[in-house]
Image (tube, rainbow over all chains, first blue to last red; front, side, top):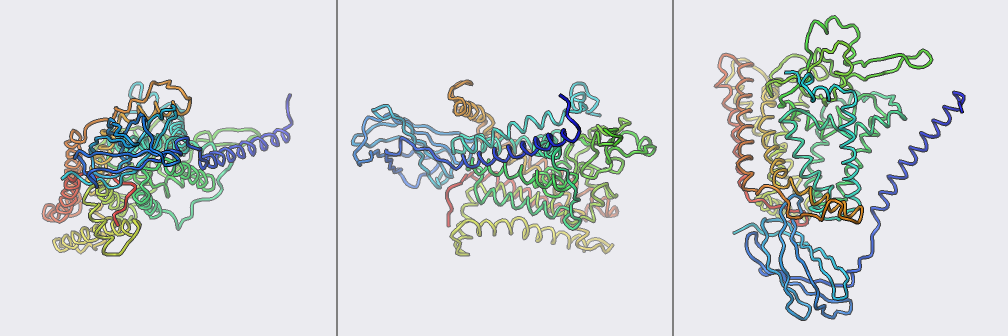
Length: 146
Length: 475
């Protein structure tokens, strides 16, 4: 089928508008979706933490103590936890630690920050029922090595 | 040596679609950055948006400039997006005369550097993705409203950074034979090449330089995006990408196309000065002493947020310190010279000599992040693939892959600063020889001192313990 020039022009204009609108819709959708949040199954798990010594210093061994409670404030035992320390700045080496259960919902991990600054402790693990948990703990201002 | 006539590389560069091809690659990378930044894990070391921009893009950008030239402007995906946009929206306006020059671009460069520190953009994948989208949007709107490469020439803060840095690049686009240009009647290198279209009309088949650089009068790399449009447009095949002495263009006093005389461009000199001192401020911001300085400033001005404290650091670092240092050096130079050149003219002459040390510091800083974190891209890509497809198609993330130990990179950082300082010392002497041939060494002394002060501060910064912060403010 061959279109007349004016019809061709109308079709092309419509296509151009539609592709422009589609691009606009795409960008808006991307922005809207970015604002959406998902329910985290680990929300029912409360993680509290302390560092010893506090504030921590780079290059000095510390102990991270984690306490896990469920929604009813009951201690969570038998959780297989992993702990990883990441710098807030990308491109830096992470540190990981073996987590040992001390009972009554308390867990300990020896750790050593390699650089001063802000760190994020990434706590991941598996509840006895098989549910995965993932928590981020922000450690602001690890002091430089003495 | 003409790189355009080298085997393989030359053939690729002369291919009409070489630029769109590399732009397309970076466009896809940008898309991945945006998508992972918006939908991926909001953990900076685990997200493509923050890893690729803060570690790889910045590092490769400065290394490419030092090794070849302004390759990242060549491959700029925003220009590809606006080229597509211009098929639908034809820009009808010219960039306002009052807004021409580098002041606006300089202000935006300072704003970007300030925002990067204030909002800790390296730690925020979603904000980084939105910034990339915003950057694309602004470039698109500006260049579909205003003709030519208005965004690149007058606004783009990254472009202004690249233009200044690429004065130290070892390659440059220039004409091969001056006589050929003299006999040329069409000036396609700047006007573009036109050919017959439908209904007896003519249309542009190949654009000329959109940044207003007329090749026979072009000097150096300032304002050159290395887009190769002039190469494709020249009907006489009279343009070469030649090797040259880095920085030599800064000694040229004559009028240059698209820019005029450097000595009459305070905006360009200011850009060179900010480029140099911003390198110090940016590197300093991630050290332990910066933390202590922030605490003191916060206490003395009663600041409870980081904005005013950073503003003080930026004002002192980018404006007060250069004004004092360069002003003092200029006054001493004037006292030593028999001819009565103004303080402004003296400072303008020597300001460009700071670019080598500035670039050396930038390479030391960005090169550090690149070398110490080069391999982090591997597990992040693997993780992004898992996020996108739900399966480890590239294997499980190898989070142990990082890069060089910081200590191993330190000698390279020292080398960058020392080489940059050596370049600036040489430039200072060359400027003195040009302007004061009777006593070049004596006149150079205050400016050699300025370079040595900058180099000493840079070396001191590099020896400080790093303290990377993003969530805490000491006030």
